[in-house]
Length: 428
Image (tube, rainbow, N blue to C red; front, side, top):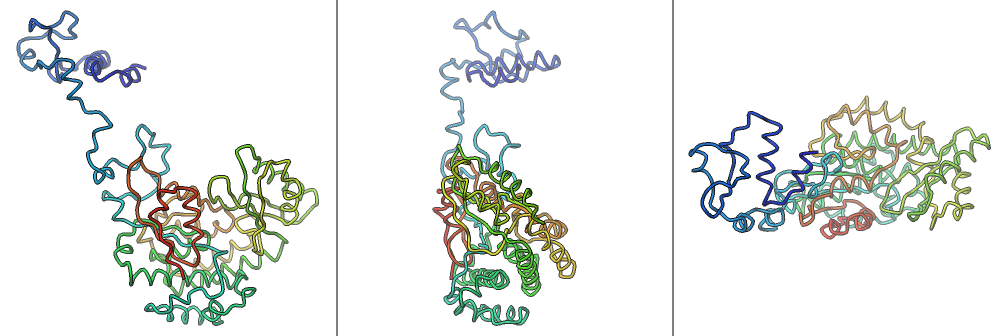
């Protein structure tokens, strides 16, 4: 209690209070360390003096008046002189608690953030016929598509350029197409913005994009990553065919009961005695917008009763399964097996996990978390807070979205508009 009282004191009395605190808590405290001592107009020590020692102490007393002491005191508002010095104050807001700040899970080097960069990679749903067309002019891009086509067993570039959209939208084709196109966008950056690649301090990817981010960070070779994406896409496609399921975007308000809606819908499906049942939040996109996933019956139940749960707007997504739910559990084992066969390295660049937003520490953590990702919610909104949370006035790093479309930039605008001001889409 005494320390809390001391923290509330004004600057004028804090020195006396600090001395009282040390005298009370630490009896052996030496009075010779007192920074200043106030005298009355006669030059003698005041009667309410906290100490009374010899002339050696008197010589260290100051003759500043209380007004001079206040004028000369440093305050929090004027300790930072220029905007260039703001980054030296750390990533935490003033008077915030370290344990409550999400910024502690991000990499913050001791340089001006404007000299650093963040790279984001998109996931499924960003594909379109004709993507990668404008990237073929850059070195190595055609070779990347040829290598991927050899492993996949079909012409991936032809599918990206000409479709048809129905085939491109299938999970087994969509994931490799977005993966290679995203890395092709990195090659464009390598030609046009090489310093942004060199100064990258963190990467993150949405769902499938997490594998792209790990490949960018040197965890997988390009060929091994294609094999991993191929197995992942095929396993998720098979899991989605076992149970009729889907995903749905939900817009809601502060009075909505989205979690309760998912629980009731799940119980509704259990009463119908379905073999596999789940309904949950699958993607945390931005404030008041999430994606839920589950059995078709569960999503239909929520659509029919949205007013009871005070949900604002619902929209089904054009996907074939309930990704990032327990309905994807059959896809976990194949991912675990392929990760045992391919080489997995420690990330050379900090990569944020979709599961908890934390940075992957080593190869073992990649092998452990990545298979679980297909059954776990994508906590994208939380990752954005971890990367971009900072004190007021501290500048943001440059951000690049590498891949088809600009969905991640649009979401960043809803989460942190100031960070979005320095975001660029390096698309196709």
